[in-house]
Length: 111
Length: 112
Figure 1 (cartoon, chains in turn brown, green):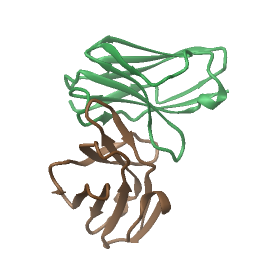
Figure 2: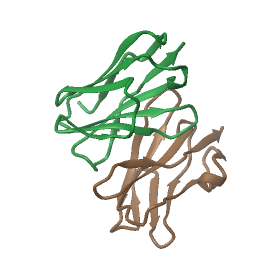
Figure 3: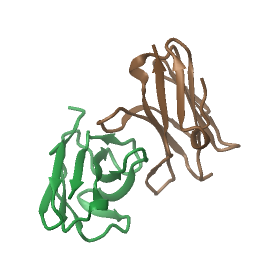
Figure 4: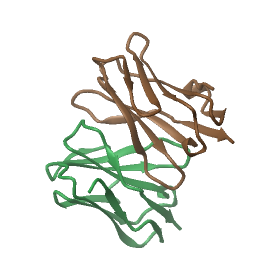
């Protein structure tokens, strides 16, 4: 399953499928990006980060892709599990500035 | 210890009350933040402290007053709040400004 962030803020996937969550960032000067997962009633939890000198970074079951040409970031979750159900935010950082968060995508995993 | 601890978890207050939110971290981080989050919205930055000095105030009304007593503690003093101030208040810390943020679980605030 795949979301396009602002235009599709919810994403439903079957357990075991791969998920792709997208984020369009706003500032071409942004050089550091983070994906956060937020479960209901909790604070955002760090998932994975990437700096602008890279275009791909992998973690455990997660991959972040960065396309600076079109200012696009994506989070891929492999073999999605019910525990992955949450809201996912991308955050961008401009040098000398703070982190600003995208609108978020709500992921629901169907058992 | 990789936690940011916030107290209380829930708070209900009237518009004439004075209350404080507390945040603590023991990771040696020198930047601490307050964010406000409305339901189904992203966190919005309110204040940043860097090396215990107020670095950024994102035009927050004066009824919110931050305080950083030392490098491990961050408070948010609340006075004469409005019902529209009801939200989840998140504290975060990072090694220095611009590094990845570690968030607490937040204080769910309701203003009646």
